[in-house]
Image 1 (spheres, rainbow, N blue to C red):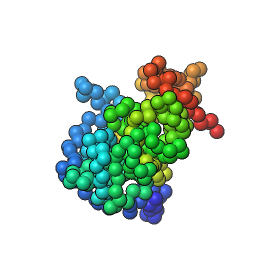
Image 2 (image 1 turned 90 degrees about the vertical axis):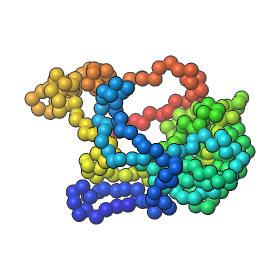
Image 3 (image 1 turned 90 degrees about the horizontal axis):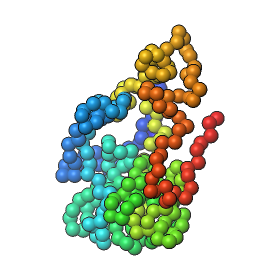
Image 4 (image 1 turned 60 degrees about the vertical axis):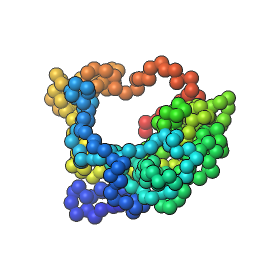
Amino acid sequence: MKRYKPTTPGRRGMTSVDYSSITETKPDKKLTKKLLKKAGRGYRGHITVRHKGGGHKRKYRLVDFKRYDKIGVSAKVLSIEYDPNRTCFIALLIYNDGEKRYILAPNGLKVDQEVICKEKAPLKIGNRLELKNIIIGTEVYNIELQPRKGGQMIRSAGSSAQVMAHEGGYTHLKLPSSEVRMVRDNCLASIGQLSNTEHNLVVIGKAGRSRWMGRRPTVRGSAMNACDHPHGGGENRQSIGLKKGPKTPWGKLAYGVKTRKKKASNKLILKRRVKKKKK
C-alpha cells in the first residue's frame, strides 16, 4: 500500500495500490480493443443507473476466462500487468504453440512461471483443472457455474473460494460472503487467490479521483426537496419519517427487503451468507 505526504487536503490520508509487482506498463496491442462509453445508459441511450459517466479513457484487455481450447498446452508467464477494467491484475501468457493470451493473475504468480489447464493438472498457483480433482481446503478462483461456459464466480481482487467437499457429482464451495454453494464437479476452476489483495484498503482521498474512475456525484435524498425524493423536505435536518424505513427516489423500500426472486439455483445453495450485525 502506497501512502502520501499531506501536501494538500486531498493528499492527507490518501492511499493507493503499490504497483511494484507489475512488470509491464503497456498492454499487448493485439489483445486490446476500443471501449465505448455507455455508462449507466440503456438501449435507448437514457440514464437507467444514476451516478455513472465520465472517467478516464480505457482500452479493454481481452482476458481468457475459459482456456478450453488450450487444454494440455503449457504456457509461460511473460508479464504481470494492470487492467483498468477490473480490480485484480492480469498476466500475459505465451503458450508453447506461440499464441499469447491474458488471464487473471493470482497472488504469488511470477514471471517465467509455467502454468497449464487440463483435467488433472498439478495443484500449483495459476493452474486450471476440474473441481473434482482439487483437494478439500484448497483456495480457488475464476470458477465456472456451467461446464464450458467460462469462469463467472470469484473474479475480483483478493477473493477466493474454498473447496469444502465432493458429493454426488457436485463440489461444495465456501464463497467469500460465507455462503456455501454446490457447483458441478466437472466445472473448471483455477488454483490460488486473486492478486491485489490490498484493493479494499484504498482511501480515495478526494472527489476528483472518484470522477477519474467514472463515478459521478451522489446527492443525499434528505438534502432534496419533498417533490424530488421521499426523504426530502423540512426546514432543517430531519429524520426520514417513514415507518417502513428508507426508500429509493421511486418509493421502493431500500434496505432489509429480499430482492432475490425464486430461481432454479436456490436448491444449489446449502447455506446462506451470514449478515453482519449493525454496531
